[in-house]
Image (cartoon, rainbow, N blue to C red; front, side, top):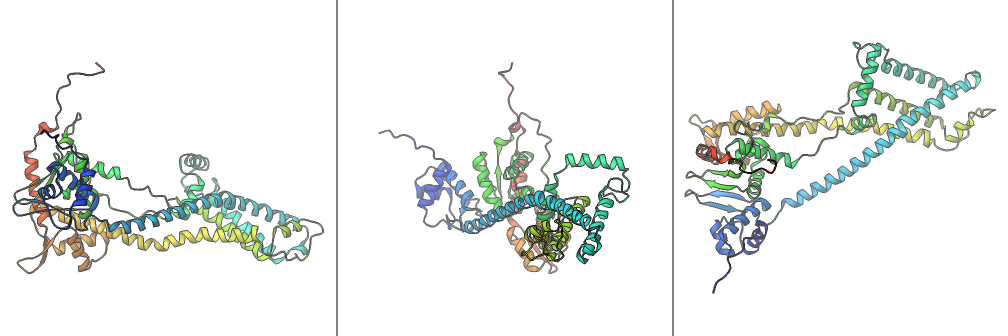
Length: 486
């Protein structure tokens, strides 16, 4: 009796069937082992294992006879999901709070900084003129207020006025030209409320683009004759080895790749289909290495000094004015009473001055406190940036030596770490970086500590042989025999 040929499964379906059949996925297994245990064709077993490797962060192992094994240290579970879920929740909560904070700040810019400044100036000037003809009605508080208003007014005029020699655009700009340049910059630059957002929360950072990371890897594949290894992925992305390995499994699924094992046990990946191109890619350059664009700490505000000075002056004015209104008990009722005749010599107690005192005072304090807190935390953030750059420097040192099978000395790694971060690494830190890259300790003839990376060395040798055998015909397409636009 004829039986239909078994239907080819989707990688996800094959992987889920394998996950339901295997009792001990932490034990290394061949594709043949999975095929027999699950009753799947070899092609489905291989595709399913690729999907599982990508999904559950599996790893490849090679025996001395060149057999390729799959192993899943965490089984078909995802213990990292709890940590990632917590990070995502905290990230979303932080983003929500940050978004709400930005919304409050934008509203505060329009209502508080601008509107309150205008209200305070109007009220203070009106009070000053109302009392100017009657010296006996002047209180010491209003006399001090006159001085504050005049000092702030002079500071704003001589700092921001385009004809001032202290104009914020610089002494080299002429008055009229400085005014035009300032208007042109305001048209092209961010609006004022965005500058205040930057002042308070710092410049917004664009989220990482996963598609850009994949594009860099695909460009590396083309530049390397369609043959790459984990070292190439780590080079262009800066990913740790345990992240690059599952990513390669996903790329093989999506781009018809295949894994190759050399006689020496070196693992490489071939993506022959990605080489075919109608463009001239023969002179394509490799993407820049991750350490060529080191991480950098974002600026504190991202604004120019003139914008920061303006924000500080406006906020300081609101803070001083709000504090004075609060200290004098100038509620809205009392402010209105001061314009009536006869004016009361002693203002009645109508409670705390909230609208014109407490609210602008507290918000202005918050607008000063938040950038100060961010400035205080910059040391911690700078430390994280330095450690990431140091990790990339260690990776650069290792990948530069392993293709030539040169041992990597402990002194070389320490020097690379120190030059990238300015920090003297501990022995535990160097050991952790070496273990991440699959290195082993090797004592030199003079007793110096050095490291060997056997897997990376075998990979480099396998890639060299594969690329030497790569044919240029793989990248060429045939002659066009039909065109719909002809």
